Structure formats: C-alpha cells, structure tokens
Length: 197
Image (cartoon, rainbow, N blue to C red; front, side, top):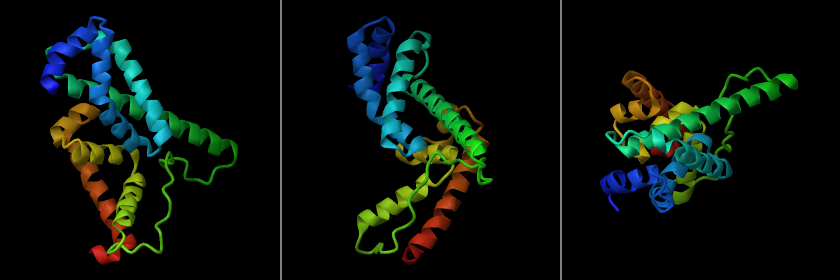
C-alpha cells in the first residue's frame, strides 16, 4: 500500500482504535524503525527492544497525530526522539558506572558502542564483505548524532531540511554533523583501507 494511502486511510483508522489498521502501520514501518534504531545503537538486541518501544509509544500517542501533517516524518520524529533519549540514558549509565569504579577519564565520550578493531588480514580488493564490515565499524565508531544524520541521509535518502525536521535541530547543525561525519569516516577508512584512496 502506498505511503499516502496509508496516511489517509490506515492511520486515521488506527487513530480511532482499529487494531488491524495499527498492525498495518507496524508492517509498513517496522523495518525502517528497526534500521533507524540500529544506527543509533549498533546492537541488534537493543535495536529490537527500541523498535518495540517506538511502536508502543506510537500506540499510546497516535491520538495526538495531526492528520493535516504527513505521517511518515511525524512518526520518524517520534522514533528519533525516543532513540536520542535512549542514548542519553545509556551515557548517564556509563558515566555512573565509570564513576563508581574510578573511570578512565573519557566518561563524556559516546561509549554506547565499542566497534571491533579493523581486521589486519582484510584484503579490500578480494573481500567485499570485509570492506562492508569495515565501513559498518567506521559508522559505528561515530558519535550517535552523527550516525543518525548519516543513516537518515544515506539510508532514508532524506535531504538536510527533512533531517532537521525529524531530529528537531537546525539545518545548519545537520550540515555540520554530516560534514564532520564524512571527515571522520574518510580518515578512519584511509587508515583501514589505504588502497581505497
């Protein structure tokens, strides 16, 4: 079913309490929401938990949806806010645990993900999956907000204005984060995959 039909018909029925219509929304968006959550957490288990939490939040708040707006961007904004809150809580927990054990001094860093070190045996000319894995590790090493703008821009194919709307941040901030994310990715991949220069 096209997204516009979903917005006009299914979302309104779901908002009125139609369980079957809500199930259709879940089917239409679950992969996108899971991918969004995964790009925040880089953990399949946590992304699955976050996806469930996003749909639970949608179920509770669908009555607040304004039908004059597009459903997709509104829903992705709900999902992005929940993911950002999850990251903030994960950071607080990390800082708390590090503080109670005499942390290492880098408590302010985003440590919700600890990407594996590059594989020294990686041959990017022959091992396509190895290159993909290395790119994924490089993206996973980015700060959470940078990961999100990269995911929304390259996976969801959103322009900077739509990303700004979804993440509730200025367009200039999106441009800055995208620029910095690209620079960090370029620097890491140059080190890991020197033959790709």
